[in-house]
Length: 393
Image 1 (tube, helix red, strand yellow):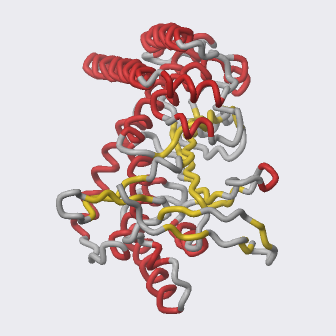
Image 2 (tube, one colour):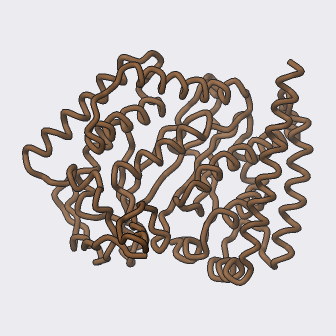
Image 3 (cartoon, helix red, strand yellow):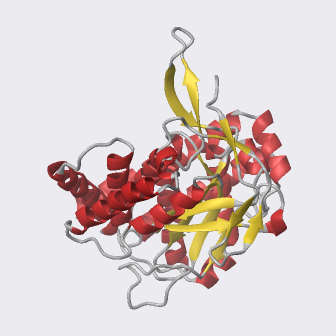
């Protein structure tokens, strides 16, 4: 396997207030076809092209019904339209756009109708490189949230470019948005070459530089105090999931020993919590952006934490229809997750022993497969329960 030529980060970044932040030098792999190779040139013509593409994407998305100012559907469609015109150079097909939008709406509506289902959002962190500042203005113009992480007192590797999505009711909008961000060009990729003809066959995410992916959820009807008092249940399910879907390198390079946390800030109210006291959000911080398994992970995270939400409401005597059966499923999942962790000597509490857990994964590659199998089994049982309840109604 060969990689595309690496580029160097700048020695500092310039803040909006005119100050500077020093950052360490680091080589990162950038794809030859990267959209930002066009977006990132700061000459007037390039700025004009990207500005016109952004305006066109916004205007086209505004023609669709149901797009509001904080809608993850809007963000996805605008990003997709921008990529279509800048990356692919294609004209916008109005009929295709309407059908694409209709399919997304149908997928979202199925999750919206499930009253207790957690809403879901993601935060992707990527290394800062010389096109990041052009990406900043484009992504913000398209509606996405962008920030720079300069935590931990400037230690090596702390300066990251973070893109956050608005919440959605189902996982597929989040998955598609991540896919479009890869197309957009902010994700370091590497190319693989065919031994037969020496030509590039495809680009893929560089697993030698794990990209931090956080998953945020708000669980309807579950208070912050309950989440804090039952945080170990959250920690156990989270460990099962990240041991299945994160690499040992991602775990060891994690900046903190916090694998999950409860927050009460940056919560966007959905229709499910309108008129109520806003609950806290659960943030799972140990995942990484990888191959197609990342998208399967998002589905399973949401389903398994829906089981947790049902169990929480039952224990708080706030049950809604369908909670009792899912509570029983969660009890079975929790028991088996405990047993899996216990078998490999991994603590079930909320702390993350980075070096130890990464070494256990390295020494026992079957652990990742077992964790995926167990999460997949209960994801399927969630779906079977959903189908059964739907048929009864």
